[in-house]
Image (tube, rainbow, N blue to C red; front, top):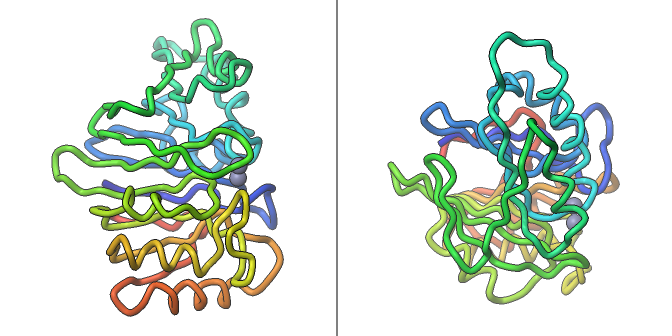
Length: 246
Ligand SMILES: [Zn+2]
Ligand SMILES: [Zn+2]
């Protein structure tokens, strides 16, 4: 499977690139993971937004859903001969208003995932773990069924010990790393050190830092995570248009 970073800033867009959004592809199936600010224009470089097969959302903070409305309008308003399939947008049902907004008649339908059950979307199988965050948010552990390859996206989260167990078995961890060393045990986000330590405990070979802070030296953030992760894990910074084969 191929993961493309469409946006990776935390909180707000900055310097020509947007907030959390990733395109995951396998077998000509296109899954959008979160749909932050700028996601739609970034997505266009890789796949026609009318050909997107599904969307899955970790949670409903603006920096993860800002472009959902314009994605719906793109598919609603684009003049086309062929009927565009109704887009399935998977989200949790623990926020009724936001869940309702996923559905637009003839355009998209909100599909509630049950976090206690494994979910199949196209070629992927997905497990969920509730994270530590001011609103309900889920980490996603995604398996490409045909190959058995696995990666985990933390969503937004502060540190909690069960996260490393959940990540075990993944080759790659895509981790919310909004904070530098020294701010551990935060109520909403991981620090560089915590992201590195989770990778080490979980035994992942690659850690990608995302949900990046706009202020501070990102090379330092990467080095702090690398030191905590140890030599068995390669730590890289997410950036727009980064592509990773998993
Ligand atoms: Zn966020
Ligand atoms: Zn959030």
